[in-house]
Length: 238
Picture 1 (cartoon, helix red, strand yellow):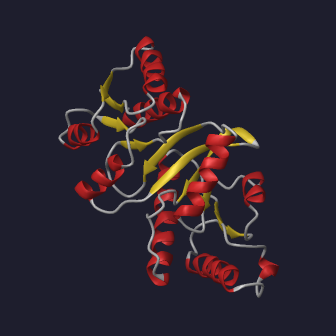
Picture 2 (cartoon, one colour; picture 1 turned 180 degrees about the vertical axis):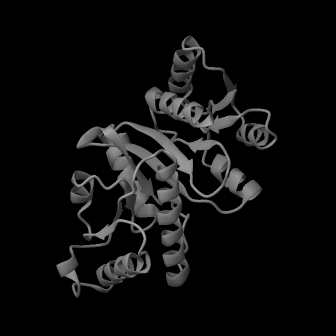
């Protein structure tokens, strides 16, 4: 049984629910975020999708299980049969402290790679920064992001990892399947532009570093995103 949060976009969630039910997938609806998370952690349901419940859902889960990272699963717009992970997407998910932020990003790279390996997908990681590499020297913020990405690249020796600055379009054309944003705000903005404005198909955001069957979805998503998230979660539970 998968739990699905009802929340404010009831029509979209109910449309997904009816479609899932017609396919024989057992789904239980929740209109209270604490009940959804508690049912998941108490193993009353085998997995949970936030649906259109408020952001308090994620904060409550963090309160219960500790710090975690999320990665949005999206289809590559240039290769529709392939997915990529975008992370971080939580606006407060990585530290503002320089050294801790670098550690967080390295952790995200490793956890994302482990997730893709579990799907028999070979990871290829693209690190985003604030300009082209030859823009070094154009500003303190730009320099900081470029040098940070170079440091991360140099510290990770056992993975296919590339840094081409701000050129997200090149990463996706070259089939990078992990995109590491500059920070959580940047990642969230990229997600909203791709998924919520241009309707790039996706499956919600998985938790990378905790063994909990939860997929986060946007309150502004349409029924297909809630449907996809439940289907993806069901596939992973088999």
